[in-house]
Image (cartoon, rainbow, N blue to C red; front, side):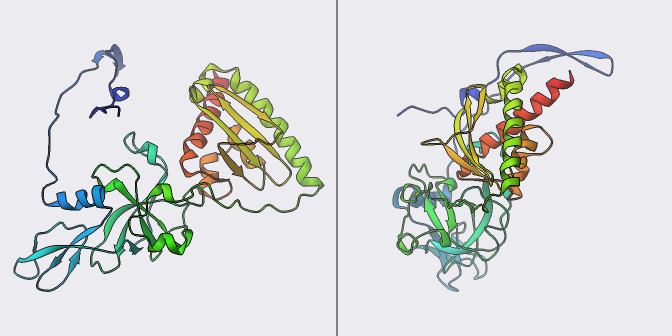
Amino acid sequence: MVEKKVIPSEYIPDVSRKTVTIAGKDYLVVNDAMFTFYRRSMGELSQFFLALRDEKKVLGCKCTKCGILRVPPFMTRCPDCNFALTELVEVEQVGVMNSTPPITYFATSMFQHMAPFGRGRVILRGADTALSIIVYTTTGILVPGLVTKGTEVKIVFRDNRVGEIIDIFCVPTSELAKEQIARKGLQESEIDWTAAVEPGLPVADENDVATYKDALNAMQDIVVQMNETERARKDTAGWKRSIQVKTTGGQFAIEIDDGNIRIEEKVLEAPDFVMVCKDPKVLLEGLAYKGSLTDAVIMKRLWISENMEFTTIFKLDRTARSLARASKI
């Protein structure tokens, strides 16, 4: 097992000194550091986090007098009962969202690998308080309206747990089999994340095919320019993805290979993920920087099969922006 550092090396900046001019005056700016490493105890919540990590259980604290059940167990004595003792009890792993969770599409560096995700609070069966939790879907990208207040959800445990609240997340029970809903300690590897159902497309007519052909030719011209522009190439440097794109008038492949992008009219045997959009001009406008692929996903005009591939969408948007900016220089 590779040991991890508290601060990953990629977050540590290089030694740098540069001059910055502000209001006509020069200032010397240098990279520096202040070390504040420390150890901390999970304290009274230790049993809660150990139960997540080691037993795949969710614990709450139940007042021995009034019976109120708080999850997580953030109190050892009940403030409503003259500080009567509480006891740890296991709670069920199915509940309902107590509000509509906002969706994070652009996370900070610490959580970027997890985006997009919902951030909400779930009231588990039998509990009297709500547990903060991350929300995912198995249907592709998490979009507004998919999970709302009152949606029934199931707790899912990460395969690799370390004793943190992100050891668990939830998905709507409507996306799971009855056996999975009933299973205590359901793990993420026991869910088929590749079974997202593609949205249907209408039967194409001559106009649809003509629109597709025109859009395809225009997109191919755009990626040629991207490949010739160093600024645009940097946005997909080190990134490799094969994408099958399906539209009403036809389908094609987008292949990203370390700064190079190809668009060809073909069917991939094993693409990394699938895009589906009724109108190929949605993609064309995004690549031409006359629209946003990110907005198209959020507004449900562009569907992608893998939630974690939202990063690829973001990179394509940045590449389009870089090409547009380079063209103005």
